[in-house]
Image (cartoon, rainbow, N blue to C red):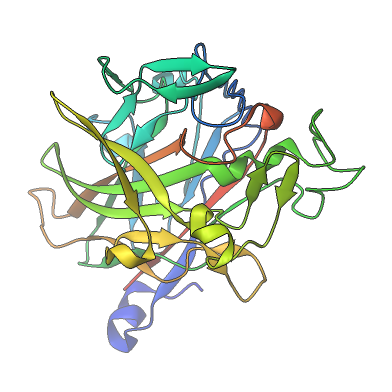
Amino acid sequence: MKNSTASNRKTGIMITKNLIILVVLVFVAVLSMWAWFTNNSSATADGINVKCDAPDGIEIAVVAPGATPTDDDYTSSYITLNSDNNKFMKDLVLSEVTSDGKTFYKPALVQSNGIASVDRDANWDKAVANENYLSFDLYIRSKTSYTVSLTTNSKFTTLHPDQLTGENAFNKSTEGDFSRDCIVGATRFSVVDYADKKEGDLKLLWIPRPDIYFYETGVEFNVEETDYDGVTYKHNYYEVTDTSKTPKTIDSKSGLDYFKTSLKNSDDEYALPGKTEILKLTKIGDDKYYTKCVRCNMWVDGEDTEDRLALVKGKFQIYLDLTIK
């Protein structure tokens, strides 16, 4: 919809337009055998493009984590972000990490009979933003105070969603009649409040494609939360302190408002299940703009069943759809 700001104030109607993040041709070179990490586990990313299309009434800027945008960085139309045009992405090599959505670690590993597992007695390194996982700061500003949310059009998709299985599967795996693009099932996305250069509350921790389940002999699709003990609808991670690494699980029973797993929408696509607020424009600055920032992170999760050797070089896209009120 294209409504004027004045009309929006009078009627209270939400203005919606796409904020689209396109992660295309993501070559996920996961070298694990059946689960978790292996030594030398890594992924390469090529042709990552981020397109941000701003709704009427706001301006947006996308910058490196911790950077401050200039007036030239803001646009009221769209932003294209990719490794060719943005220096902070030039060293991005997606690696399997463990994360609660805010803190990211690369565990030390041990291997037995070709199967990798984490070494909880060793020291773990923190994962590095835009080396091991994708991270950027999204700034939004406006002359009017708004609440900004992600809508149920937000989704992770493969390039050819109708060709994920069968002899003629697109980007077919060498390990069976299924597409490498099923790696999308191992992705995670988070949004973190980020004000005054400090991380705040977690606004979103999202499993975009819980409908995909990879097992030893193939892939199953349209998996529901009641299937396989809900394993694909759970987020597993390690809580790391100076003295311990404690396994944790988050699922729908955890009672956390920010935790989301995609469900089928009206277009029969797996998407964000409900409108999710990410920020409020409430503080006006000396420049007469209401401005706020959130940090966005995307990673490949080592605990996920789709993190497999058979899905090396998988490809997927991300669409984030914003609405303002």
